Image 1 (tube, helix red, strand yellow):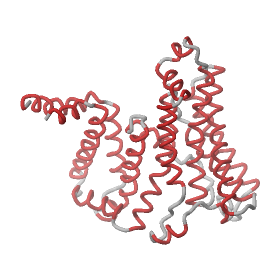
Image 2 (image 1 turned 135 degrees about the horizontal axis):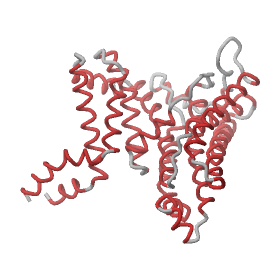
Image 3 (image 1 turned 180 degrees about the vertical axis):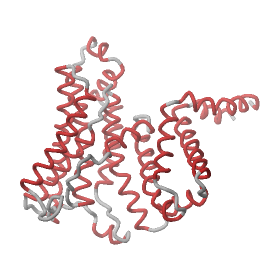
Image 4 (image 1 turned 90 degrees about the horizontal axis):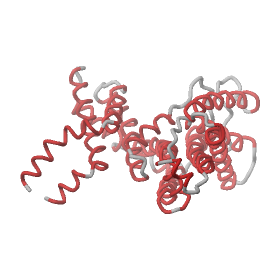
Amino acid sequence: MNKVMSIFKNTAVVTPFVAIIIGLLLGAIIMLIGGYDPILAYESLIIKIFGSSYDFGEALRTIVPLIMSGLAVAIAFRSGMFNIGVDGQIIMGSLGALIVGTQLSLPPLLHALTAIIFGALLGGMWGALVGYIKAKRGINEVITCIMLNFIALYISHIVIRTYMPQAGTQRSEMIHSSASIQIGWLSELMGGARIHWGFLIAILAVIFYHIYLNKTKWGYELRAVGLNPHAAKYAGMKVPNVMVRTMFISGVFGGLVGTFEVLGVFKYIAINSVTSGLGFDGIAVSLLGGNTALGVLLSAALIGGLTYGSQGMSFGAEVPGEIIRMVIAFIIFFVAAPGIVRLFLKPLQQKLKKKV
């Protein structure tokens, strides 16, 4: 019983769990009001994810960019900055991967590796630019990020239309097959699901994030600056350097999202008037995961699974896909408002105390 009590006292663990349950229950209520069967809807969601090897592979593919985007937002949060510019860093990463993938001719493994590195560095430099402007000029990073998102979008349009257009379409030409990071044999085994090496890199990124943040001097400086930049400066830490370095790493994570999407999924870039929105999804992943490595991994799996599984709800129970977005919004809301969650937990905690 004491072990059970200790679990319920750990709000960092209990709050997201309770928020998920409340979000799913509210989603079920909305479905009932709309005349839908919530049990059939959630059953269809699960079947969509686990019903076939293809769907399971595609669900994993959906989770990968959310992991990287969540890490990009989380590491900036831990340093006291709000990286709302991950979308722009994704665009620059995808553009870098596209340039290498279409303009160079290299051996398969070297070509893919070069494209990944160049895309990651381009995203990192785009993020570092935000950190530099913040550190040297004191300009709020939110404003800079928003502006750079649009600048990145239109730079990609200019470059694609000038150097890499696909005739008669609103997209770039395809990358060379030697630059692809799709795992052919595993893709065939899973019915054509677009499985790529980005999944392994994402897991390595989660491990790197945990070690860097908790086991290194640079990670300690990052956390110190995030908690109190003035105290960190008084202690002799170079706060501007920490900001630039952190935003560079954040940009690398964001840039890798773009490289994975270009090299492993679509093999081209479409010319769109808006950004992908994956950077903003990363904010939700980071908040739900509490900015921890394991939390980001699990929250990305949850949000990615719900997003992909919503297609099953649409076909299996005729439930609009927007409802699952509402469920995700409910979950994020209750995680961001832990006081409300505590109101739900209080009666249960009191009952457990009486039994003890």
